[in-house]
Amino acid sequence: MPDSTGPALWRASQFDVMDKPGHERGVPAPALEWPVDAAQSLIALPDPHVPLAPVDIHALIAQRRTQRAYAPDPLALADLSFLLWSTQGVQKHTPSERTLRTVPSAGARHAFETLLLVNNVDGLAPALYRYVATQHALTVFSSNESMLDDVRDGFRNMNLVTLSAVVFIWVCVLERMTWRFGERGWRYVMLDAGHVCENLYLAGEACGCGTCAIGAFNDADVNEALGLDGAGQFVIYAASVGRKPC
Ligand SMILES: Cc1cc2nc3c(=O)[nH]c(=O)nc-3n(C[C@H](O)[C@H](O)[C@H](O)COP(=O)(O)O)c2cc1C
Image (tube, rainbow, N blue to C red; front, side):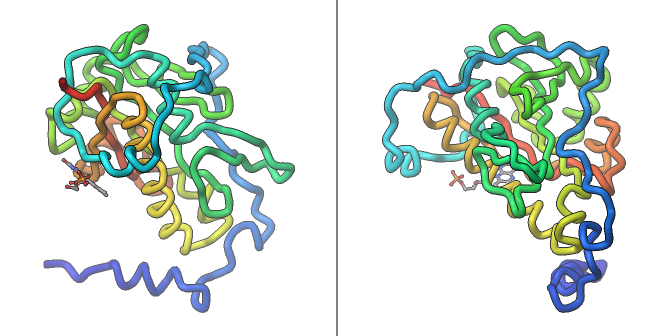
């Protein structure tokens, strides 16, 4: 068995041993999100602020359970919009070119991009989409079937990614976090990912959906399928969502 590298990361990310991060060395701040290709049109999403039926936060937390089987019904686009807003929705731009969102993030760095593997959502053709958080809109990331199959193949539980309505795939753009926090940023992106997925679980509960967090994927396969280098940009976490079966 190879030596565990966990303790080395833990040690290297402690304040007393870390090198100065980029922001203390005059390195320009990385962009707060991926650029939108001018050739790609934005797909507007419904207003995520349309009130839901009143919810009881105690009940939501009490009834949250991982859901691995889903009803065959499509997910409404309004619900998808609400789930995206709940997980990465931008509420405010700060003067220092950061964003405040519906989830907390160390230093408000928000180092994630959200990709959606859409299987069964009203009004969206099955394809891979990207959520453009600053505009609360989608763009098509890829509709190439063989690419989508390669992405699916990278996940270890095929049912979750084929039988759910949609799979959220969170890509970490590491420099957004390490520019501010250096090696400690590695810890923070993992912590931040947990907040995002927990909001997905709870927002899903509020609109009749079930969620399954997914940590079991073959990193190299999924990253390669998505065209990510696996070092500076990589899939950090995913989750399948669908309507709860009756
Ligand atoms: C970081 C993390 C990774 C997980 N990865 C998977 C996974 O790959 N496949 C899966 O079926 N469930 C996965 N789960 C779901 C857990 O198995 C589930 O949360 C656990 O069994 C407790 O059940 P509960 O969520 O209903 O309380 C993951 C959960 C977390 C928090």
